[in-house]
Length: 121
Image (cartoon, rainbow, N blue to C red; front, side, top):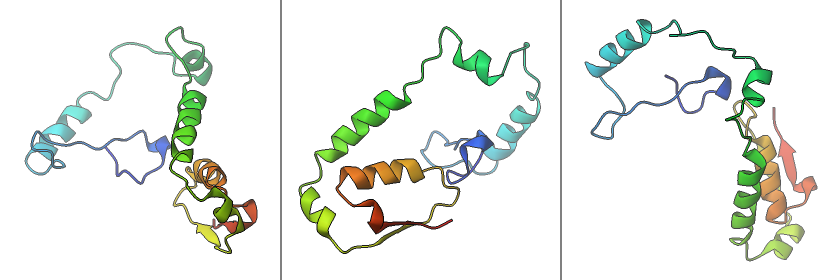
């Protein structure tokens, strides 16, 4: 269980109770106990990247989804030509940098030149 801003390597997710709010006492203790009592896998799995990526049920849909997303947001931009001439300078400051490729592509879709984007590490 992790905060939404943590990197994907944490393999975490947010938990919400039936009321739509994040978990709070006493439910958090019960959930934590359930996690601790189930730390060992129920059976042996091959977790290697190769095994996962070549599994018969695995399909990498990243490109398909990304292409559809950028085509969709492109329709939202009514001033692409003006964006290309705009003197605006954009500073991108990601906590972990995991969104940089997507932000760069979105700004390109909206017509901003690469020279307008400054990447802050």
